Image (spheres, rainbow, N blue to C red):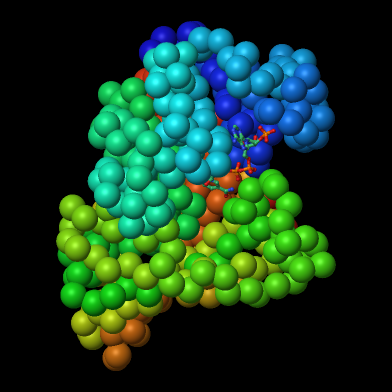
Length: 354
Ligand SMILES: NC(=O)c1ccc[n+]([C@@H]2O[C@H](COP(=O)([O-])OP(=O)(O)OC[C@H]3O[C@@H](n4cnc5c(N)ncnc54)[C@H](OP(=O)(O)O)[C@@H]3O)[C@@H](O)[C@H]2O)c1
């Protein structure tokens, strides 16, 4: 698309955490004008009253929340709603915009029966599932370029899939063993509605295992890896003292006697050309492995590994910001591909340190 073209964008569910992150990214996109942002609880308020870090940002300082019923047509509609909401109203949203990017899990799985086994309900619009492309650009770039509809990604699924993909793709990991994924997550993963478990005295300082079996994102990872085999992925998720961040560690047995160059070869051939996946595998220093704190606010995924050649014991690692690469960042990357914009547009923030 012509670099001078500006498209109109609406965000449904813009008062939440992923909605706020979409606003932050899209307000800095040279080819986007955010023309509408919905919230049922904050109708009439300026968006910066809910997202105070957006005060004074560019021309959209005056943007106010509207209710869903007031939505008008636009070029791209982002849906950032709780699970189940997008599928119930997808016909209405599709009538408003030619392109839709849904950040929920509503259109991530291709098989309608998987919604019964994974989410415990029949899908409300199963005929739409095959119209959506799974929105992980590193795995589905070519399909996204011609897609009208893209799903978002699960944040834990994103970290797990990216941690595994280089070795799975290279055939170094077979599907003959279960893969145990230890996932550590920050508090923003749970969304902006306060709950008993997010109350500060209960949440602060925790290392709290909360879902050790049967995590919903397992289905997404299995689906992503299926071109390479029938992988049995099992996640155990623990809340830790972070606001943003996911750290995934996958524990595997590989053949003994592999060389470092086997790993480097697989990682470089898979990720060497990618703008947002960085290989982190250092021999010295305190930042030898992927670390989510360094990625807050960015669209990067850092991936790495540790391997013991004597025993074959292997740990594959990935870190992301759940609101960035695990949600809004990937969604904006999808939009860039779908609209023919530069893929990295609005996504180049490099993080802060310390
Ligand atoms: N948080 C993450 O790390 C993350 C990562 C990847 C994907 N996701 C997915 O992204 C989606 C949004 O997550 P989030 O963390 O941004 O959630 P959130 O902070 O709870 O925000 C949800 C948004 O939806 C609106 N909303 C709530 N109930 C609604 C309803 N019944 N109908 C219409 N709007 C409603 C809320 O505002 P009003 O109540 O004011 O309308 C709010 O704007 C979820 O499906 C989640 O699974 C989240």
